[in-house]
Image 1 (cartoon, one colour):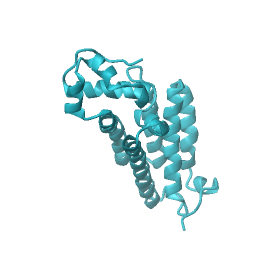
Image 2 (cartoon, rainbow, N blue to C red):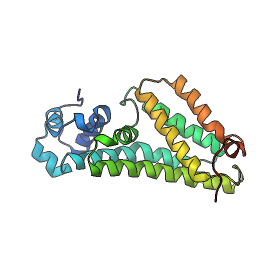
Image 3 (cartoon, one colour):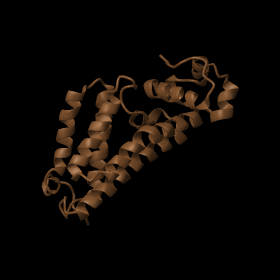
Image 4 (cartoon, rainbow, N blue to C red):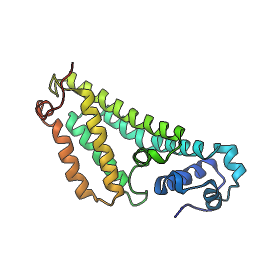
Length: 210
Protein backbone atom coordinates (compact mmCIF):
# COMPACT_ATOMS: atom_id res chain seq x y z
CA UNK A 1 0.00 0.00 0.00
CA UNK A 2 1.67 3.25 -1.07
CA UNK A 3 2.16 5.70 1.73
CA UNK A 4 3.04 9.35 2.02
CA UNK A 5 1.68 12.78 2.78
CA UNK A 6 -0.66 14.44 0.29
CA UNK A 7 -0.36 17.80 -1.42
CA UNK A 8 3.39 18.19 -1.58
CA UNK A 9 4.99 20.35 -4.25
CA UNK A 10 8.56 20.82 -3.01
CA UNK A 11 10.81 18.49 -5.07
CA UNK A 12 12.82 17.53 -1.96
CA UNK A 13 9.62 16.47 -0.18
CA UNK A 14 8.43 14.60 -3.27
CA UNK A 15 11.74 12.75 -3.43
CA UNK A 16 11.44 11.71 0.22
CA UNK A 17 7.95 10.35 -0.39
CA UNK A 18 9.10 8.52 -3.51
CA UNK A 19 12.04 7.04 -1.62
CA UNK A 20 9.81 5.85 1.23
CA UNK A 21 7.31 4.22 -1.11
CA UNK A 22 9.87 2.57 -3.40
CA UNK A 23 11.71 1.40 -0.27
CA UNK A 24 8.57 -0.10 1.25
CA UNK A 25 6.85 -1.63 -1.76
CA UNK A 26 9.56 -1.98 -4.40
CA UNK A 27 9.94 -0.57 -7.88
CA UNK A 28 7.26 -2.60 -9.62
CA UNK A 29 4.52 -1.84 -7.08
CA UNK A 30 4.72 1.96 -7.24
CA UNK A 31 3.69 4.00 -10.27
CA UNK A 32 3.92 7.68 -11.06
CA UNK A 33 0.13 7.72 -10.85
CA UNK A 34 0.40 6.46 -7.25
CA UNK A 35 2.93 9.15 -6.36
CA UNK A 36 0.89 11.82 -8.11
CA UNK A 37 -2.13 10.93 -5.97
CA UNK A 38 -0.05 10.85 -2.79
CA UNK A 39 1.66 14.17 -3.34
CA UNK A 40 -0.77 16.20 -5.38
CA UNK A 41 1.91 16.79 -8.04
CA UNK A 42 0.65 16.12 -11.55
CA UNK A 43 2.59 13.69 -13.73
CA UNK A 44 4.00 16.51 -15.92
CA UNK A 45 5.53 17.91 -12.75
CA UNK A 46 7.22 14.57 -12.06
CA UNK A 47 8.63 14.44 -15.57
CA UNK A 48 9.86 18.03 -15.33
CA UNK A 49 11.53 17.55 -11.93
CA UNK A 50 12.68 13.93 -11.98
CA UNK A 51 12.35 12.47 -15.48
CA UNK A 52 10.64 9.11 -15.92
CA UNK A 53 10.01 6.43 -13.30
CA UNK A 54 13.44 4.84 -13.76
CA UNK A 55 15.17 8.17 -13.25
CA UNK A 56 13.04 8.95 -10.20
CA UNK A 57 13.93 5.57 -8.69
CA UNK A 58 17.63 6.21 -9.26
CA UNK A 59 17.35 9.66 -7.69
CA UNK A 60 15.55 8.10 -4.70
CA UNK A 61 18.34 5.52 -4.31
CA UNK A 62 20.96 8.26 -4.59
CA UNK A 63 19.15 10.29 -1.95
CA UNK A 64 19.13 7.28 0.39
CA UNK A 65 22.81 6.69 -0.24
CA UNK A 66 23.79 10.31 0.42
CA UNK A 67 21.66 10.79 3.53
CA UNK A 68 21.86 7.37 5.22
CA UNK A 69 24.46 5.02 3.74
CA UNK A 70 27.40 7.34 3.03
CA UNK A 71 27.52 8.89 6.53
CA UNK A 72 27.79 5.36 7.98
CA UNK A 73 30.62 4.50 5.60
CA UNK A 74 32.36 7.75 6.51
CA UNK A 75 32.17 6.83 10.20
CA UNK A 76 33.75 3.46 9.40
CA UNK A 77 36.60 5.05 7.45
CA UNK A 78 37.26 7.63 10.18
CA UNK A 79 36.94 5.25 13.13
CA UNK A 80 40.07 5.11 15.32
CA UNK A 81 38.94 1.83 16.91
CA UNK A 82 40.33 -1.63 16.08
CA UNK A 83 38.91 -3.05 12.87
CA UNK A 84 36.61 -5.55 14.60
CA UNK A 85 35.13 -2.84 16.80
CA UNK A 86 34.76 -0.51 13.82
CA UNK A 87 32.80 -3.03 11.79
CA UNK A 88 30.71 -3.99 14.79
CA UNK A 89 29.77 -0.33 15.29
CA UNK A 90 28.90 -0.05 11.60
CA UNK A 91 26.73 -3.15 11.64
CA UNK A 92 24.99 -2.11 14.86
CA UNK A 93 24.34 1.28 13.25
CA UNK A 94 22.89 -0.43 10.18
CA UNK A 95 20.72 -2.68 12.33
CA UNK A 96 19.47 0.27 14.40
CA UNK A 97 18.62 2.21 11.25
CA UNK A 98 16.84 -0.61 9.44
CA UNK A 99 14.74 -1.47 12.51
CA UNK A 100 13.86 2.16 13.31
CA UNK A 101 10.11 2.58 13.75
CA UNK A 102 10.18 5.86 11.81
CA UNK A 103 11.59 4.19 8.68
CA UNK A 104 10.55 1.23 6.50
CA UNK A 105 12.12 -2.04 7.60
CA UNK A 106 15.34 -3.04 5.93
CA UNK A 107 17.72 -1.05 3.73
CA UNK A 108 16.54 0.56 0.50
CA UNK A 109 19.83 -0.18 -1.29
CA UNK A 110 19.91 -3.80 -0.14
CA UNK A 111 16.24 -4.37 -0.96
CA UNK A 112 16.78 -2.97 -4.46
CA UNK A 113 19.89 -5.10 -4.95
CA UNK A 114 18.11 -8.27 -3.81
CA UNK A 115 15.16 -7.46 -6.09
CA UNK A 116 17.44 -6.56 -9.01
CA UNK A 117 15.79 -9.11 -11.29
CA UNK A 118 12.64 -6.95 -11.16
CA UNK A 119 14.43 -3.71 -12.07
CA UNK A 120 15.07 -2.19 -15.50
CA UNK A 121 18.71 -2.08 -16.58
CA UNK A 122 19.66 1.44 -15.44
CA UNK A 123 18.21 1.19 -11.90
CA UNK A 124 19.67 -2.32 -11.60
CA UNK A 125 23.13 -1.12 -12.59
CA UNK A 126 22.92 1.83 -10.20
CA UNK A 127 21.88 -0.45 -7.34
CA UNK A 128 24.85 -2.71 -8.10
CA UNK A 129 27.18 0.30 -8.14
CA UNK A 130 26.13 1.22 -4.60
CA UNK A 131 26.85 -2.30 -3.35
CA UNK A 132 30.20 -2.20 -5.15
CA UNK A 133 30.93 1.15 -3.49
CA UNK A 134 30.28 -0.37 -0.06
CA UNK A 135 32.52 -3.35 -0.81
CA UNK A 136 35.31 -1.02 -1.99
CA UNK A 137 35.16 1.00 1.24
CA UNK A 138 35.23 -2.23 3.26
CA UNK A 139 38.29 -3.38 1.35
CA UNK A 140 40.10 -0.07 1.88
CA UNK A 141 39.44 -0.24 5.63
CA UNK A 142 40.64 -3.83 5.79
CA UNK A 143 43.80 -2.95 3.86
CA UNK A 144 44.50 -0.15 6.34
CA UNK A 145 44.00 -2.58 9.23
CA UNK A 146 46.35 -5.03 7.52
CA UNK A 147 49.02 -2.34 7.34
CA UNK A 148 48.51 -1.62 11.05
CA UNK A 149 49.15 -5.29 11.82
CA UNK A 150 45.60 -6.04 12.95
CA UNK A 151 45.02 -8.80 10.38
CA UNK A 152 46.98 -11.81 9.18
CA UNK A 153 49.45 -10.93 6.43
CA UNK A 154 48.26 -13.79 4.18
CA UNK A 155 44.65 -12.63 4.37
CA UNK A 156 42.63 -12.33 1.16
CA UNK A 157 41.30 -8.83 1.76
CA UNK A 158 39.04 -8.86 -1.29
CA UNK A 159 37.34 -12.08 -0.20
CA UNK A 160 36.84 -10.72 3.31
CA UNK A 161 35.40 -7.46 1.97
CA UNK A 162 32.87 -9.46 -0.04
CA UNK A 163 32.09 -11.58 3.01
CA UNK A 164 31.39 -8.50 5.13
CA UNK A 165 29.31 -6.98 2.34
CA UNK A 166 27.25 -10.16 2.41
CA UNK A 167 26.82 -9.84 6.17
CA UNK A 168 25.53 -6.29 5.74
CA UNK A 169 23.01 -7.55 3.20
CA UNK A 170 22.00 -10.33 5.56
CA UNK A 171 21.43 -7.88 8.42
CA UNK A 172 19.13 -5.73 6.32
CA UNK A 173 17.32 -8.74 4.91
CA UNK A 174 16.72 -10.13 8.39
CA UNK A 175 15.40 -6.76 9.54
CA UNK A 176 13.05 -6.60 6.56
CA UNK A 177 11.75 -10.04 7.58
CA UNK A 178 11.07 -8.80 11.12
CA UNK A 179 14.20 -9.64 13.13
CA UNK A 180 14.63 -7.48 16.24
CA UNK A 181 17.81 -5.90 17.61
CA UNK A 182 18.49 -8.79 19.99
CA UNK A 183 18.60 -11.28 17.15
CA UNK A 184 20.52 -8.94 14.88
CA UNK A 185 23.11 -8.18 17.57
CA UNK A 186 23.79 -11.91 18.05
CA UNK A 187 24.25 -12.26 14.29
CA UNK A 188 26.57 -9.23 14.18
CA UNK A 189 28.74 -10.54 17.01
CA UNK A 190 29.23 -13.77 15.09
CA UNK A 191 29.88 -11.97 11.79
CA UNK A 192 32.63 -9.74 13.18
CA UNK A 193 34.21 -12.52 15.22
CA UNK A 194 36.33 -13.33 12.15
CA UNK A 195 38.12 -10.04 12.78
CA UNK A 196 38.78 -10.50 16.49
CA UNK A 197 41.99 -12.48 16.13
CA UNK A 198 44.79 -11.82 13.64
CA UNK A 199 44.84 -15.37 12.33
CA UNK A 200 41.17 -16.27 12.60
CA UNK A 201 40.15 -15.39 9.04
CA UNK A 202 43.03 -17.18 7.40
CA UNK A 203 42.48 -20.17 9.69
CA UNK A 204 38.80 -20.30 8.76
CA UNK A 205 39.66 -21.18 5.17
CA UNK A 206 39.71 -17.82 3.38
CA UNK A 207 41.94 -17.88 0.32
CA UNK A 208 45.35 -16.29 0.61
CA UNK A 209 46.68 -13.57 -1.63
CA UNK A 210 48.39 -14.68 -4.82
